[in-house]
Image (cartoon, rainbow, N blue to C red; front, side):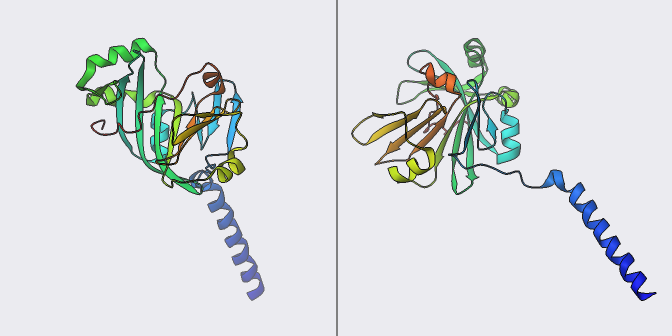
Amino acid sequence: MKLALKIVGIVALLAFGLYFWATDFDRRPTRVDAPWQIEVLSPDRLKIMGVTLGETTLEQLRQRFGQIEGIALFRNPDGRYSLEAYLGKVNIGPLSGRWIVTLAASQQELEALTGRAIKRIKTENGSIRWTLNKDAKAEQANRAVATLTMIPGYSGMDADFLRSRFGEPSRIETVDDSSEQWLYPEKGVRLLLDREGKELFEYMPPSMMKRGQQPAAHTGSTEDAS
């Protein structure tokens, strides 16, 4: 009798464990890749750190990685508009950092958004920045992420470290006396290395990079953008 009760108890525990495993499956933490684990899905689609550029929306980004600190609309000195959103500290594998994403929108849509701004200022580099009103900002949540820029929290990563993770760049270009950029056009990746400042990891679909486009991230422009 005691043996039978033990067997029944073991079976019940196994059944409960199997039920818990099955029902809790969708609540398990999603695996997030490191910044150098890049998956090129097509020339127009790049998957990086759990984000599929051109598909993942700003709202999905918020749900997965945390609060959006701000959204701002820009027009650069050449007259091209960009819509950018800023995330706080994001932990990705062994690194943490701030994220800046540009959102997919036509130039006509972005120009129209200037009429829904509550503030307009000129930045140091000659760009114009608009702070959108509350309703206009909320409406951007369903826009897809077009490009992503990560500013790692840790600076001073040396060339050997980056090569061991990202591989040998297709080419290296000097930016100024203290910085250079490493280009990986087949991966849609651009690394900006600055001996006197922060590194930048920039990601875009390979087709964008081959057309010579760059992420329009204004890395010092989170102020007044919330």
